Every structure is written in C-alpha cells, then in structure tokens.
Amino acid sequence: MWLVSSLELRAPGVVAAEAPEFSTRALVADGLTLCDGIELVRWADPGQHLRHCDYCGGDDWQGDWVMMRRSGERVLLLPAFNLWKTGPGANAAPLEYEMDEHAPPAWMAERGIAVIRHTALARLVEGLPAPEALPPFDEREAALALQFESRRLLGRFPQVPAPIRELFVTGSEPSLDEALDELERTLHAMQESRRPVELVEQTEGEVWFWVEDANGPSHGRDFKPLARRGGELLLRFEPGLLARPR
Image 1 (spheres, rainbow, N blue to C red):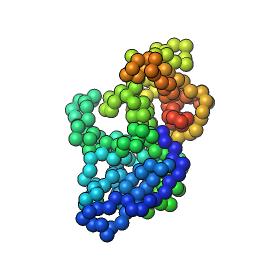
Image 2: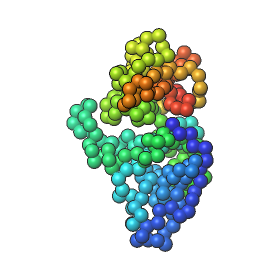
Image 3: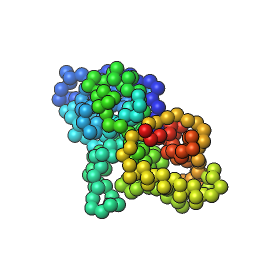
Image 4: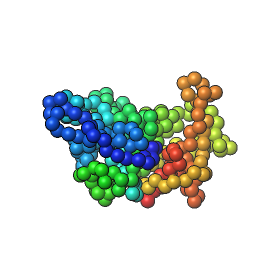
C-alpha cells in the first residue's frame, strides 16, 4: 500500500476542448497525479472515475476507476472490485468489458493502493463523503486487495485468493507447506466475511516467503503477506500495515 504523505491541488487539471472556459484542478499525491479533475468526479457514487476526456470533459473513458473505503481515519482508494462483473460459474473470468472499462489507474500497479488521511482529502475535495458515510474496508476486500498487490502470487480476480504454490521457494517458518496452508486458510476465511477491518501499523512479526519471478528463483523477491500480533495471524500489507478485524 501507498501511505500518501503530501496532497495538493494543481491547476489547471483536464481542459476540455469543447468547454475550455470550465476550469478543473488535479489532485496530486507525493508528486503523482491521482485525478485530473476533482470537480468532475462523482465522489458519492459506488465507484470513482479519476480520468476524464480532454475533448468533452466526460468520464466515458476506459480505466482509471477506484472505489473508496474507510479504515479508521484513513480513506483507501482500491481497485473497483464492486464494478467487476463475472460470467457464469463460480470461478469464471470477469467479463472483459467490465475488467477493461473499470480497470484501476496505472499508478496503483506502480505505487500500490493509496491510503490517505480523510481530513487531508476533505480539505481539498468539496463533496467528499463524511467518514461515517463511506463503506468500511472489510475482510473480503482486504483479501482481494492483497491478491491485487501480490502481482498474481495469490491468483487473479475472480479466483478466490490463494497462494500459487509452485512460485513459493522457501520461507521463515519451519515448514513451507504448513505456512502456505495457513496463508490459504486465512485468505479463504476472509474471502467469506464482510467484517470490517482496521489497518494498524506494525513492523515486526512478519511471516515471509521467498518467491520466484519469471526469471526463476534466483531473481525472486521477499513476500510478507502475514504477521503475528497478540497471538493472532493477520494479513499484512507493505510497508507494514496489518488488517485487524474490528
């Protein structure tokens, strides 16, 4: 996840050729543009489109969709899982139109899911829903968010998040198979639950794995999807955020 540290508005945002007199402002986080025109976003809708047409100013544009969720005093900008419809069958691939049309912004693949203080965002965005009006971040969404940020180590939506075992080489636990079993059980239980979770910061107790990439194990990386806290095993996001059920 991306813990946003600075947030500002920059003008002009998107300038529509059909209505050049209509001014917009871009929302910029840590020097990266999150949204090209905050005045054009329907902030109270189930999903938010953050990119707009530079000809008409409309949002009939493929990709750059997010959904907002609340976790304590923070707002999360997540992939718009709620807008991704699937075909027949429990494990069917998403309808290609829906996946393409409501794909997340490119910055999310690079930086991760954005985590922003609600107070900081509300100071800049008129019409932002109050914290209590935003849906809470829940266990199912946490499992899907970790799947998204894992770069397919945990499968790909709409598959139930679970480790792709042949990619896991070794880990911090005595038994790799038992650790992967525990990860799979945790993800499966969360996938079935809509209980709200709160993100808490912790930089110790990680359960880590060494995973291979397309070039083989010697070119792999660390993956730390779990951490222990007070006797519980919780999902963990970089750079050290645990999804603790409320």
